[in-house]
Length: 304
Image (tube, rainbow, N blue to C red):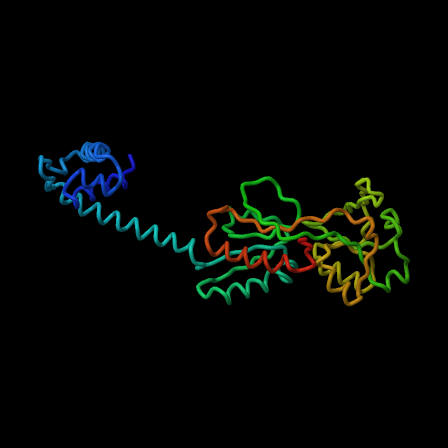
């Protein structure tokens, strides 16, 4: 038996002073009202109502129980209203995680816009180049770059990025430009290592077959910092591989050049992921709407 529903029926019987009137106001059958009151009395172990052919009156136990029921039902409504408010209007703290450089370049500005739009919000932006367990670590929303593992998380796709191989014009002037992935064996390689980078570089054959080409470069310089690797490439030390958004500003100003574009592998998707599904609170839904709209308009992410 739903105890709160039973309490509500009891309160209505007491207020209407009749089973039939209570049944009509609740749009249920009189038999259901009678059965519920009988179950309540059995559970409590006391008579709550005195029934006659003309009226229904409360016993002493019924009077005390009525007061308790009204208090509990009122508290329940307040709890539901408070919870409902969290789902209706953005408020409270929003915790977001993203890869370090993506977060610095593209998520942090959105956080500022979000806080300007919602005065009752606070935000915490955590930047990691690792996959974070957002449920265990109490995170509301995460940016994920790459194919998603099967999970119960909800995901909103916001675009895609490509892997790009690049170096400075000065480096290519001194050492020449590789024409195929196998040519990388004759070049100096700066490799990023860590949770989101691999020492085996994968390419795709340009012949349309979709055949994958794997190359394991002999990287004399390895670092877990994409910024350090990129700076080494800009300084002319060697060739680096990074995601297209990481290279874009330096390609635009001419400090880096791309090579092996015909061999680029398939792009990898970018998603916003969160655990609540359709029941996500307003603070999460509002940030997703803003971030998706902003990032999908950015040509770097090729949402299509």
